[in-house]
Image (cartoon, rainbow, N blue to C red; front, side, top):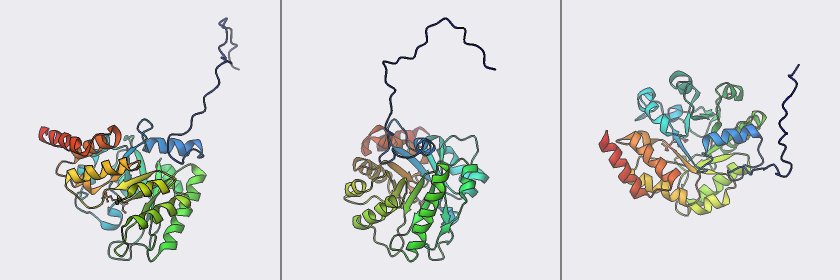
Length: 292
Ligand code: 5RP
């Protein structure tokens, strides 16, 4: 039985103040349910509207690639500087302490290794297991124009349906296979297909005329880093992508293969969240590197 409210204080209902109903801050994301929005707000910082995701899921088809031989030694020191970690469930359970509070973006497709046809992926994790691991999003590779295009699109739409049941958003990752051209026309096609078919956000590569990619994609886009570049070039790419409408980066090799990975991810944060120029961020990187 609840206690009787004996307070003599006048009740403060404030009927004159209408309750605010806020629009959700992320592009195209206002119609989702609360849980889905809350997960997205763990990935994308609600203040800047942007994200710095650290991708180290490469082992799911490449094995122990350079920089990821020992995830415990190379990646864990970077985690405090990332908004989200993009990884596989094997690495999550074996290597990532459950005390970390980063958003986890789970690699949810896989199958072939670099020795086989990469587009022949299937769904590689059960949505129930994603709930168990408290992930903030599930990432699936989509091979538009690839040999197994339809199968990879179906992987994504199936995951979108499963994710919608439990409030987990899907990240559509546009793959660039050996035979696929990485030009703006292709990237526009692939990102738009991911969004049309239900991806809550899309990861793709930065290309010239990127503003037409972000303009024609109705959900947020994050860019992949791609092959290792000189640090200034990688920072400039992040700057250009944000200026042209990207909602963040999901960088791997350009961070963990850097000469100084912690200063590099800190510099990327300056660009993405604080609007710093690439040159200033590069100076910041050098200062932090020399401080070690
Ligand atoms: C593979 C992926 C990888 O996680 C990601 O693209 C790798 O990041 P980077 O290119 O920055 O090393 O999604 O397709």
